[in-house]
Length: 117
Image 1 (cartoon, rainbow, N blue to C red):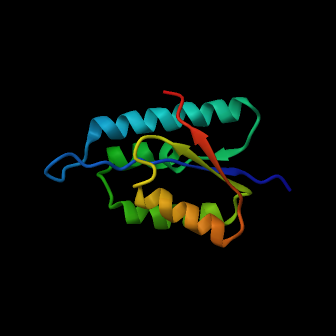
Image 2 (tube, rainbow, N blue to C red):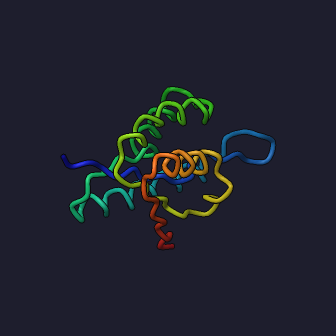
């Protein structure tokens, strides 16, 4: 049975004052999308939560990041590997941290991808 790679990257960002930093979030979405399409072009089967749900989140009202973490948790459970795209802020991202912890708790290999910027 062929499994898939879960591609994690930071997404949510806040501007001073607490509002969502829409520009940074759009940049992160685009960077994740570019990585995702490159991985698929290389023949890999990939699930990327930022690409899969980022537009839904934007169009239907921003949800608390914990909502999306719980939504995506089952996808990690069945992944064969976790790739982490090391965009600026990845080490501080609560979501990425939880995704890594979840993968390691399940003995899923974690691979770190450098940002090409």
